[in-house]
Length: 384
Image (cartoon, rainbow, N blue to C red; front, top):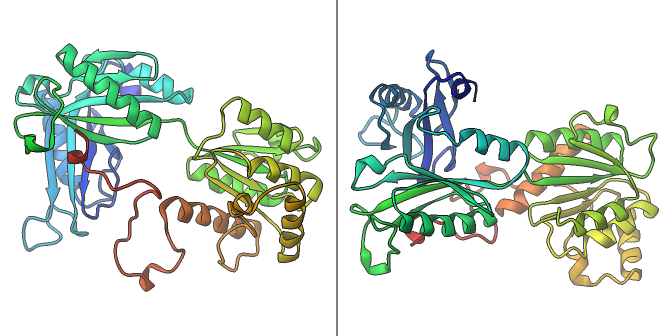
């Protein structure tokens, strides 16, 4: 943003499509500043040099380029991906002239408001390359060159935004919907939609030392962290510097309030660390009945776990409700300290999200990278 605000032009390289194994996902970006400095990454090092050179050329020419990178010869360490995958990278000059809406996008992201950026990355008319729409649930800015294309992309981008998905969408040159008989998109339009949904939330119940370590780990992974405890002497911002918010309230009441506000969704993780039935049982009773929540875990010994389950059954929770509970919380890493325990907890959350088994990669065959649980693998040809 500093380059944009100063009136300068930066080269922005964005991964728009990955094929087979790739080190960085779609949406990963690298920025080349006017002074030649670099921020970000598109491949973890495999093709950074080539992308840097292309970004410099694009800024000089003032015209975007879509480039595919991958192994193309016998030298695995030449320009290419040693992991055997392919990356499509869209490189464009970014300035106040080429991207006047950038400040609106940055403001929405900072305010945790959902917003999507749809950019034309392929089109038979090269003058359409780099045109973009900024889409949120209520309005859109910019344009792709025709009302028909704008209408189609706004509709599809809002669908991706609701799901928190980033993808390449394929259309005819004027935004026409493509059917399965349309073949490739060499003569059509491709639009990369980057969805910027609000950061997922982690709600930590219990202002204890384990909570401080977990808040730090969760913040590192990109969560918006809230620590909640009914005891004001423990629930202080000074004790939890990594948390975005520290709330003094009864946890079950706080969770009900967040549910009523619509602030808990399928990406939210709720971690109950109190060890005290008067706090954790009412909180879990609410959490396990939430219609949408990504993860619910509770800390405690085996004996505490069995006692807690009985209390929850007595409160009317069903076997289906209790199956959603991860207790004792975390993966079996042999963790002892608060910091080690925090790693085991976030490791379990990651494994649940991506369908990992928690085993050493050396003991597992097949792909290293997984698709999100419940979400099919998706390429640009899947969206018509």
